[in-house]
Image (cartoon, rainbow, N blue to C red):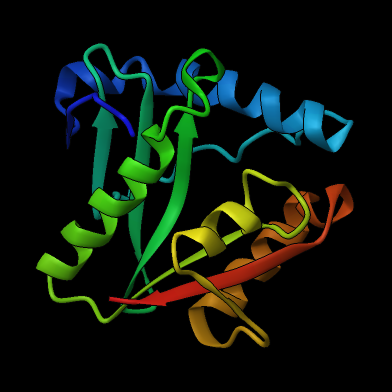
Length: 162
């Protein structure tokens, strides 16, 4: 179990999150066996619903957006030096609690089906596969395909009732 404090990200945390995500992405790229496509340029109009961080300085973070009126776990990153210590699970649990507190009914996400620290991990947190995504989740799936993420492995949508 993680012993790090999970908290809302402060302005001071924001500068370090891209490097933290890049380190976590290197682990994902190694698991996939190829480099990840470049992330799209941030859309200034696209503000997260909330950002949670683990530790100070942050060694993990969760970004939750509002997608189609539901909380959506857009990003979960833990620095590889701190992997397998329960930090990701603690961040997911805190994100679920925060979204529930904001009145959301569901949390969704998109992930790789066959990466152990992706879909199997989220299933162990209570998420279930969405067989046929619709609405905003289907639109998100289309944007991911346009970015080339489908070429790296099978991607699925998952959700959990809050």
